[in-house]
Image (cartoon, rainbow, N blue to C red; front, side, top):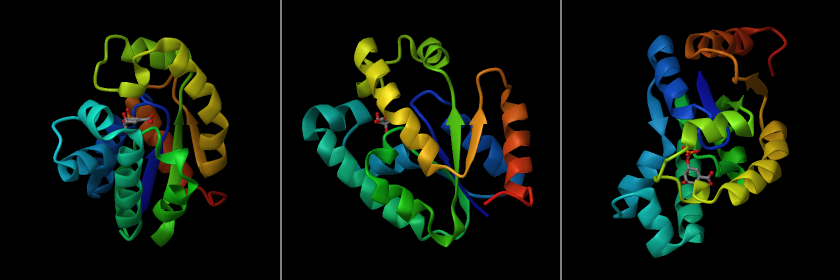
Length: 170
Ligand code: S3P
């Protein structure tokens, strides 16, 4: 089974990917960590500041292509993976199921207040604008949407597993 978690920054992709991978005995892949280890930089903000966002997106697309070839695993993507729709096409290869962890901007704002590791969440009005622009793209790209705001991680895990095995799931 190959599960790909998408969603805005702070939607819980990394946390959920770890839990799901453990529960389903699958390998977990954290795209941002893999990109960072290839970049020669010390942090994601450093890639953005020194090389620019376009370079980050190029590394992200290369990684999406590579991970697309995997037959199984749980992949936690960066929030901007949907910036290039080819990334989603890549990640869907080998039966990849795209799960959107949806959260309201208010929930995300609460979680990310004070976070300095996300270059695109340093200016609140811009982050809100980005959220507005991306929301419908996440929806269109995903096969399963989970509204996470009021759910615990174990409830989200349970719902993802149920939806993945439901006969109507695509
Ligand atoms: C980004 C999200 C980040 C990271 C980078 C860009 C985005 O990942 O890939 O800072 O464009 O939304 P998280 O979604 O894990 O924060």
